[in-house]
Amino acid sequence: QVQLVESGGGLVQPGGSLRLSCAASGSIFKIYGMGWYHQAPGKQRELVASRMIDGDTHYAESVKGRFTISRDIAKNMVHLQMNSLKPEDTAVYYCNADIATIASMANYWGQGTQVTVSS
Image (tube, rainbow, N blue to C red):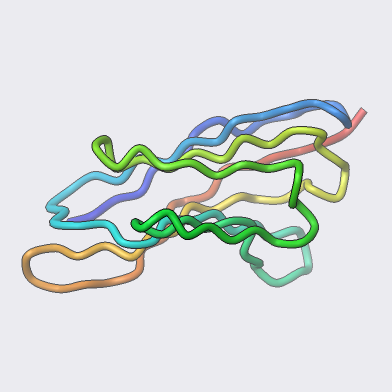
């Protein structure tokens, strides 16, 4: 079994910073892409940032210059450093990963962590 567990969400004032972390565990052979999505109330889940195993990185236009995604390959972790947070960044943030086990390859989601940006 493979699990993704997020941490680091919370309440922050506009202009503040938060760092999200996601740890993958289980019978992992290899992790290809890891990334973060967010979903605000009444809206669709959207990609925030992703990072492939070769280092290829993608950011949503709305977070470019403010958010940074990084991976710790050895620890099967991905982090999202969020700076200059805005109220419109408020959402549930989900970790996502393409993971190969010995038996198969699949896409996995974490349970989500709430980020609220408010004064």
